[in-house]
Amino acid sequence: MGRKSAGGIAVVVLVAIYSFAQPQLNDRFGWNLPGLRQDGRGQIVLDDDKQKTATSASSTRRDRVDVSKPNDSNTATVGNSPKPTGPLAGRMNSTATSNKTQSGSTTSRGSPGESKPSEVSSRDGDLLYGLLRETSPKRYLSPAGLMYTPGSAEGHRLEHLRRHTKDDPNRPGSHGVFDGGMEGTLKTIDLAYERAKKNQKTTKRVDDDRTIYTVDMGGRVGYVGGRTGQQRRNPMARRVQLVLEGTRVITAYPK
Image (cartoon, rainbow, N blue to C red; front, side, top):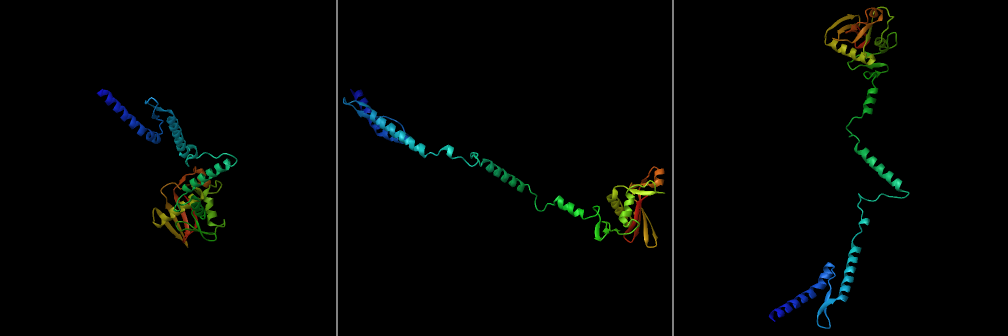
């Protein structure tokens, strides 16, 4: 009898705890725990009506939660936004591409301090043959300080000098020809003038108001042409004959 009494008390306690906790658990966790009631015979049975009510309440709670929860399909992030469709899609895509292109061109643009090739070219273009600066009409100054002015049978000393940039096989005697065209010729003459001023392997003589330098350049600067040069198989020339009036060039040629 003692065990039955203790068991009955335990059952009553459990039923009381369950009856107290059941509605709170259903409300908090959305469970469908059935309620308890006493039937006509005095026995504890499940309450079907309360279970149905709890089930309906739980379902209603879930519906509220689902409605309040944002829809994943409607909360697209900026990075994953869907691509536009329709008649304006092409324009929108082309605009975005244009913006990216402009942004890329801005970042790849050089800093203001960088020199631009076009500017350098335009400045070099102001120099005749890339070397001579025009100080007055038809008067040109070389980097070494030599002047090229009108004169000679050709009308200008530069035109006379141009004759020494190519051979004339029919010319009697020797005809000195510079290597490197006009630009190479002008550079060689400037170098010879610098060596002459320092008296480096240079002979000098004066004829009236003209100074005649013969400068050994230490290597090939051209060749000997003309009829004599052709007969000698156009030997290499390593000296420069430079005739000046002050700093004005009268003539220059290799020999």
